[in-house]
Amino acid sequence: MNALLRIAAWILAVTLVVLPVAAVLNGWIAGSRWPMRHLLVTGEFHQVSDARVRSAVLPLVQDGFFAVDLDQVRRVLAELPWVQRVEVRKRWPDRLEVSLVEYKPLARWGAKQMLSENGELFPAPMGVVSRLPLFEGPESRAAEIMAFHTQAKPLFLGSGLQVSTVRLSARGSWNLTLSDGAVIEVGRGDPQLRLARFARLLSRLESADPRQLQRADLRYTNGFALTWRAPAASPPVNATQAQS
Image 1: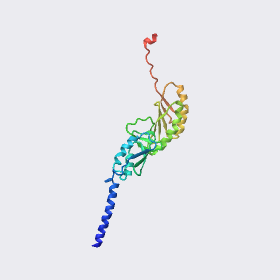
Image 2 (image 1 turned 120 degrees about the vertical axis):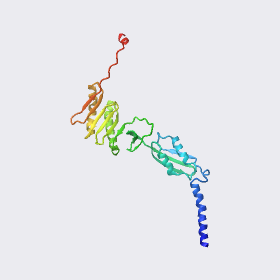
Image 3 (image 1 turned 90 degrees about the vertical axis):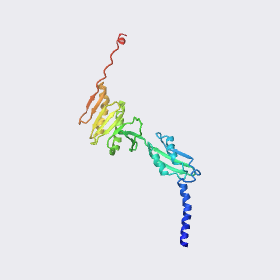
Image 4 (image 1 turned 30 degrees about the horizontal axis):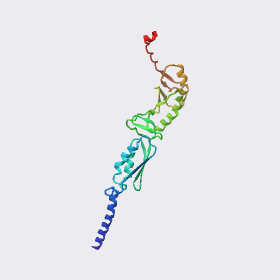
């Protein structure tokens, strides 16, 4: 009997110690005694607003310093648009520190994703209108598409054009669209060499023909085929202006 009493007394003592600690850690009691008063947000971010971070964190810190679940705060912030990485820590007695790193977009990827500068795909935030180039192709070859765009971009700067779209088919055939709407069918097999050769001749070709290039097919061994847009019709001359 004495042994049972000792065990019961030990269990009661442990309970009296553990329960208050658990209550504090879970915010059941004393949350107002150790409130979380300060939120420090750091990092280089432009798309995510400080106000948005605070509104996401505020409901999670209502039960005091000890009850703040850092993993939960981290998960909630990681779900915000543009957030690539987030770190969260508590500083006694009343401060929560949040460090954010945003994705730096390099291009749009299809209709619903974007590609970051370090090659990561992430959901395209809704309502974003971007002038970034469009990439399309197998996700497993994102690095190749990035590299091809990097090599192609400077080739057309002399003509005042940007590479607005890069497409890579499942069979490995390359296709570009320039900022003036011209489509360049590059094909497979030494695509960089073909494109560089065409870009060197582009200004000469355009000076020899007043029409605007519509399509260039580079999938030939010793040349390429060009399609030109029909020249725009001249506006009719106003009779009054003609007399003057």
